[in-house]
Image (cartoon, rainbow, N blue to C red; front, side, top):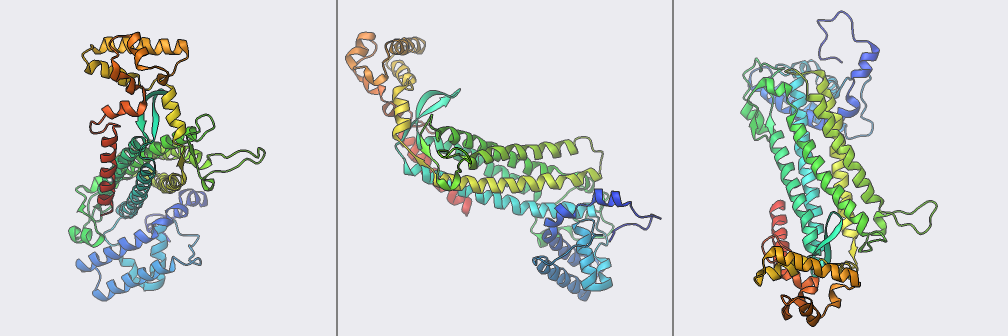
Length: 460
């Protein structure tokens, strides 16, 4: 059925009908559409359009449709253009002529905005729950290897030694920001648009605050034209989703490398890896590669809606129907990737001796030595040059840091007094980094405990 048509002598062509139909993707808004229509029926009673008996009949019929829609046999009609016409047709079948009153004073523009906002609130909550679960798994993996030393990298070159928990907590912080961003996206979606009409505001004196309370919204929108033209709340979600997938992709890339034969730091569980159809020996990190790949799809969804919205005049334009497929796609990929990432983290095991050896055989201690010289009174630029010469001499002689004795260090340069030899061990040098946010053992232990407390607050 059509929600319009009186002005037309002819109906739309079959091609236009097919081209503009959106039910195949916006059907997932059905539950939200029903909730919104039930609340609107109560508002219509408040302004005298519906009697109490009519309102009750409509609300009950809509509830029956909601339950019916859960059954596999729930069918749409070929004439149903979108989820809204589907619900109206089903409502007429159940409630009769009174169903024709449900659209009084309500535009599909505000109805769509409402449905998407209701749906987005749920998706934000879902994604935040999955993020918190992933962050919890990272904390548990960190706690399994509290003293493990690994090289930290810049430019994918060994730079300074860090503790394994410190490395994992870096991703914890990224995901914590994502959790906050999704909360902000939810806050921006949590504004009630009903009462805006098509663009000029409703001609009926609805109690918009009561409608907002009925649907659990924090506030009402301030401008009816803005409501008709706005998809910022969808872009906010897409940006938050894209940034989350960006962080997941970086973690995936790290672990693809670290679990490779060339690094050999860690193992991924067999449940998150796959083999080769030709090469019997292969154990491929497909789960991580898929996460890395899906990040591009989600970023593409953000770009898609940005391009759709960039040149639209106020207020509503049918282009805006194109918001839903990228929004739904991004939400599905976000939740799926977060769920997969947690399973990967839960399956992972570290081989602590391997990254510890990588740190010990390289010169990740160089900065520790230079800073110790600076603390002893050597100007840092001079200290930097001195340690650089030590590294060069070591490379030319094929010596690792542990190959130097205290006497050899002192012979190389008198500034290297007897206490400097202990700093040739990566685990010793990091003990100077107890500043908050640093990789010192005490600082990391405190950060892990704080992370656990933050997770508790997220769950509250």
